Length: 324
Length: 285
Image (cartoon, rainbow over all chains, first blue to last red; front, side, top):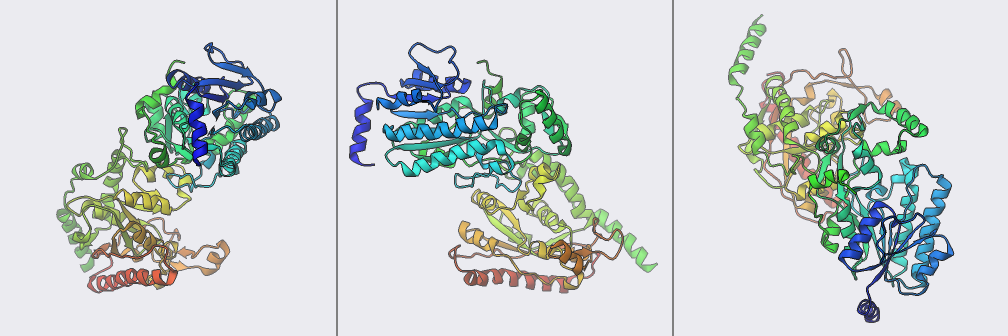
């Protein structure tokens, strides 16, 4: 980085609180991140989400807009945005695939366009370790260099993989912006993502004869990783891991759940039917996550970001039952 | 008749000569980097391992009546690659080597073998193998274990070795080079092991047309029902552990330079096999 750019960043940070645009702020995880950045670190927050933000503190700015719209561009136009935190990747398995694709890919492309047009010095994408894909021939721990193969067996992951690729291209192309891609393992907490929802089921289905090792990370720890990524001079792709690895069965036992084992040839049709009838919110392809290993190596984030999970294994597992 | 008496005597001897292994004590003494739930990062747990060892010990002591020579060559700690010949249609040689490293030396060692990529797709095997410390055979996994000062078991002959027909017994197939690259990269010593006995556990004939048809390196058939060798014959296993071999050099060297080193290991194992065969009194006892 040249000294001029360094100057620009420090100039911006001294007179007024830094301003961060957070997409997807209306979700539970968005709240956690906003609270961490706003309350603890004093950032001024601009939320972008097409959903309304409930329980919003007065000093958090929120705009209910579509990322692809002109209004979203206006947020950046003044050129006073210090960072973008992109959490707004839509996962809704019930949404129409075409709409999902357009929202995710076009939305992200537009955001990156605004960032380079209005010289936003920092972009943080919350991707996921799931982009590597659960596969029988995975090494036990995937590094950041591993190919993103999730979409091969799992078309629903296509969007996330493509967003990750879009932002990593941006990382190399837009050198005046520091881009950080975080690929956390299964985030658990008082939120509505697939792993937390699954772990909250009293009698969750498991696959007979399969018990992969899993990694979980506390939502608060991921918020901390985002805060660390926002610090200057951090750029790159980082796997974010929690306090350790445990078999899925040990997690369910710790939570006092009573898993129902289904032979895997039957699980697909059963879950497919349940999904179509609306009894389950888990797409069939997600079964691979309770069948094969998809674990990552978090040593780079520890070495370069200085990230260490604050929560222990038991605390992290029990975070799914935390009150909101 | 004479034979039968001899057999009964031998069985009686076996009963009195079998050492009483302190499995609980040895399991406790085993170095496992477990977390608060008792699992290491590859999914191994001492509790599951203990149960598996009870079965493995029975096979080792009673079924195969294995004898281990030169176990003092096994380093008591630190990274190492155990390299052995592979034979017998069924991977009992891996089990016997791992049992020997656990049961015989003063300090038990966990030697982790590599399983084929299809294993994680098989129900029960998928997680049981990992509970027992076996790992999916990728170089990344080996590298990680070796840097954590663990021991890895490699059969450089791979499938070519285990499926070789009876006519090729105790002739080493071509060695892969991966283990040597790993040894050079991680600075791990190589402990050569010769396994005598496994070749006769399932004497097989290679049905070449079927192998060609199925595109497998060999299609071994045993000349007795049920013809596919699911149960090994109760042969006697003899393991010969050699002195650790140290290599230095660049892991990314050309194949020819690497070949020299691989050949040294292969020759060492081959000559240990020759000596072992000469000293062997009988296939079954």
